[in-house]
Image (cartoon, rainbow, N blue to C red; front, side, top):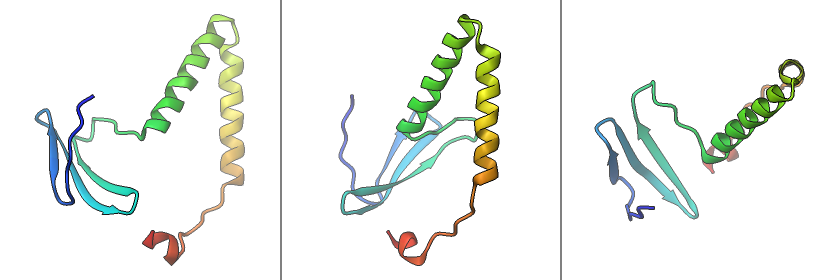
Length: 97
């Protein structure tokens, strides 16, 4: 792993198409801006891990002949989430943190 030190307003360039800029450092949080082509997918690590775990599970279920049932369950859960989703506007306090 390459470890670099950057201050606020300083950047890193990855290849020819990606620039990471440290926008702010607030306590133990770092705000990072990313400039990259739209076709490059950018995920938080925990989201990336969840996607890969779900794909791995889907492959295992498909090998066991349960692929269709997995798709049905996934659709059911997505529908339930949509039905119960509430749109919450962030409070002024949460926007400042």
